[in-house]
Image (cartoon, rainbow, N blue to C red):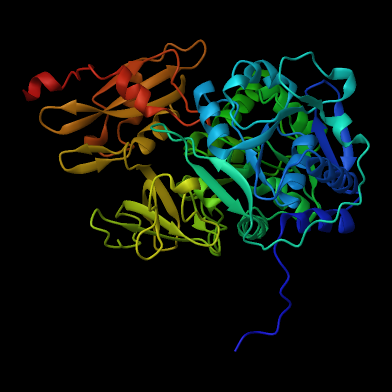
Length: 546
């Protein structure tokens, strides 16, 4: 027997209209590429999104076709998201930090019909436009006064495009399993693979993100998603904030420490989210200028493991609560957030930090488990670590056009490629990527743990750890360090700082100092490049073992 409930579809257009009807007056603030700040509200967002949906129909965009964006977090980009998906097409966010060859591949693989672009990416697109096989035109996200001269074919001014359109567009009653968003993985090997989100998965994911044990978003919150919309759906914030009716502040292209600080203060932001590199720049700016945070209460940090020292600084110097988060493009992206459970309120500082460095507890409806190399599930004792697998209605079951083949096991689990532990209370901690874990004498060493420990040493700006071939132990860790500005911290000082904080056999065999550490387009350390760079490196312990 089936239940007798209404069969209303979960659609992202429903989020937009809910925000306009119930939180219409709530402000949306946007830093503009052209210069001045832009302010309007959810009523205006919904009206302009409907105008754009009419315009897209006029351009000949059909349901199921991809329309790409190459844009920063601005109000026009948000309008594109809702209009493209709402009319039944697919909003394809392209990461502008990818190499030109990757952007060409992605646009052609998705068969993008149009590209909506910010002014900053005009030159980038002009250089590759003749290689974009399906793109019929380019919409420049600006007004007539700032419309540039460009060689891009069929270049259209965004404000001109929607100016004469009606706001009376009626969102179609789509099947909630209809595709609505597309984001490509930022894999370091091979071509990126397309993750195709549905209306249902995006709505469910946004609902999960707003939960009290997740991001705990409310209508009274002033939220600034610093994480770009081209990074795995901006971690759902472009959907979740309108869903609850919060103030939405979009920082545009300037994500340096000073610009982010000024936006946090000027707009009285109490909740924000981004990767650790952004917060490193913010903290450095604040420390250099003796600044404090007057409004910020909570920050979500993910994308890569958060150093213990960063959590300590945010919480115990500036009074900002940190929620360590983990997820993947394939997961929409949120999987876990590190929020405390009952009984943890009175833990001392070090005990709190011991928990905060973990990626946290799974959010419903995601499931997680860890397995050994043979697929056997391992205990949740906080000690055993193995391959991290996930499943749920917000997680991919295949890549676009079948790239990569079958990605689920026979029970529907997706292997994340991460190695992790899960403790008895359900707190998960990533210890490494399976391809980055250091295998020394038959045991595993976590490169992430070593990196996070090293960056706590005074004078260290950034750290990376890779395995170097060793004649006796198979691999041993090499610690690669970028010194902080003005620092002359030495090898012996760093090793002395680390001594006693990890097992003796985990201690790096050597330290190499570099000017910079390479990163992927999403800000992760590019260890494949480091392994190539140090392919001929010989550890000082190698001679003794031979």
